[in-house]
Image (tube, rainbow, N blue to C red; front, side, top):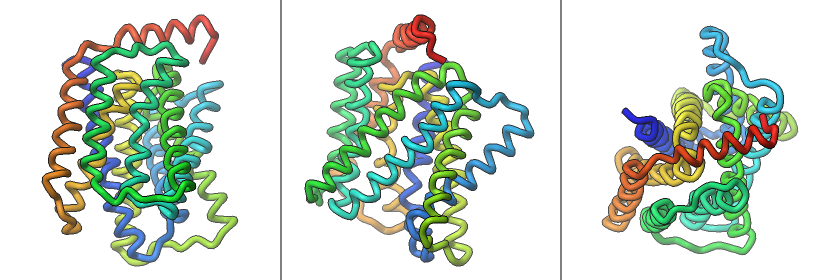
Amino acid sequence: MSERRTGAILVAISAAAFGGLAIFARFAYASGADVTAVLFLRFAIAALAMSAYLALTRRRWPRGRNLAILAAMGGIGYVGQSFSYFTALNHASAGLVALLLYLYPFLVTILGALFLGHRLTSTRMMAVVLALCGTALTLGGGMAGQPLGIALGLGAALIYSIYILVGGRVLPDEDPLGAATVVMIAAATVFGALCLAGNPAWPKGGAGWSAVVAIALVSTVIAMVGFFAGLQRLGASDAATLSTLEPVVTIALAAAFLGEPLGLQQLAGGALILAAVVWLTRSNPAAQEIKAAAAARETSGYG
């Protein structure tokens, strides 16, 4: 199997794991937990599990400048994106906020071309547009929001785009497991500090704690490691576009386990996203882009 196809499968697994987050979170919130508590437990449990695995297998941890960059990705990037996204939900509809967040494949492609010399091919742009249209159809109506909610939703997309682009520069030099663990530890530290400063509401009962553990192990460990491993093989732009599978998985799981309706509009949107995924997977590998990024790191002294 080619590296590109392996990368696409890994990103698809990651998207499926991330797609379950909203379903698990629904059960965690129903048990009495609040957002800050869930986010802290998510990253703390994931960081402990990954740290134990790295210690047992003696895998290499990131060091030096890359360690600092990955810590910033978790402590600033992930925390900033999460804060912007969840705050935006208080000022705009969930559908609008989610759609604004899923502008990130477009932003990653454009920013990568402008600042990192990534190739802006017609195939890549058409796949991004196709995935964006599919996301709009999948998320459906309810597109109402205040200016603050729109600004925060756009901010979440921009922060996540920068996070992916930075990850694309660091990951060729690092073990994706070690890199993901550093991000988790940094995010857990910041959310832990927020818990200490506030009065978080913790989950209650077996169902609530089971949902939190599922968020940590499925929607964090599997999701982040799969994405980082896929990002290594595909590059930032294509990995971001393939990640638009996530809302398709979320809506399918919501229909299966929460009884939420699944209409023709959602099915059509899912078909468009899948078409974009197949198109990118079958297109020419982005080897030149990865080589160019590596050459840029060598000439600039990066890493």
